[in-house]
Amino acid sequence: IGGATLWGFPTWVTDIFFNGGLAMTLVTCMIGQLNSQVNASHCMLDYIDNYFALFTLWVANAIEFSGLLHASYVVQLTVGVLAGQPIESKEEPKTGAVLAFFWFRCLLSLAVLSFCVAVTMVALFDGKTTMWESVPPGAAVVVFFVLMCIVGMLEGMQIAFFAVAKLRESERGSNVFARKTCELLYSGDGHNL
Image (cartoon, helix red, strand yellow):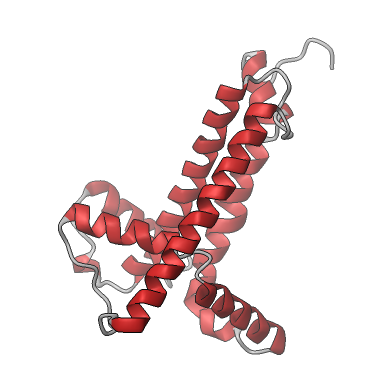
């Protein structure tokens, strides 16, 4: 409809959110991915009841063994050191060849991550992405990192929800927002997303 506006938003807002697909990206991340994973966590073992699920598990185990994603362990260890708290684990401390293999995979993962970031930055600055032509390369980099932060926060929330689900209600903290979030998430049978 010519001249129509959506909820009175300025044209630049509707262009960014609706014409550019940002709204669909956020909806997919927040509704399609996060909620279904949190709901599925209550019966995760029940999903490994067929050969395709077993195949998926073994592929995930192979990726973990390869060390491709071990950069996340470097981040975890760095945060633990900066926080002044040791990382709690039920595993025995790594020593000898196991420790060397772990750090080799961490370095390999950091090298792969650095290469991927370099390729992405070159593509963004050379205009070889599907970013709108009117968006300058610097803004494209900012949008990229903002979206990466949003996805990272959603993944962090997911991990926090899983960890808090194991705690008794009295152990969930005293912060007002923490209590309200827990009441919303875990009321009833815990399927209240």
